[in-house]
Length: 162
Image: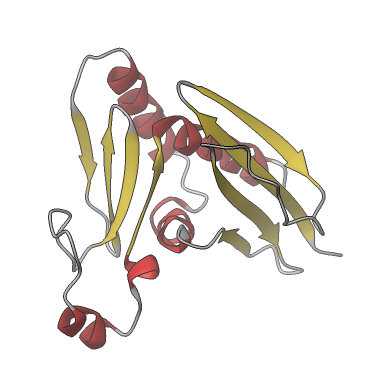
């Protein structure tokens, strides 16, 4: 039994977004002006354990995905419903508190924050981080709502591909 691995790059620009499956060995991109890449990779080891790696600056999303979503099927429909409501202007914000990480969705953005850190803090206090033993990117990450939705859909496909 080998390692099952998929890598993806989600490309945001304005209201449009595209997702491309990329070869496992390819992690380099030439960014188009004004666009940000949310790169991620999903894996399963020989025992079937799920793993996710994200581009620098998005590490908290990987931790949230593994800790708070994992292979739990009940979480994704709730998230899809909230995203749909946000996209259809039926709500302004969605908050989901987790054991380790909290999620905040707005009409344009998804933000993951360590449960011990306040979403509203502009800068995480160095004393807070020292006590928690991680740096800012592991404590808080954000991306566009469309990128977040695409990532969730790819995660769902990956988990089902067992």
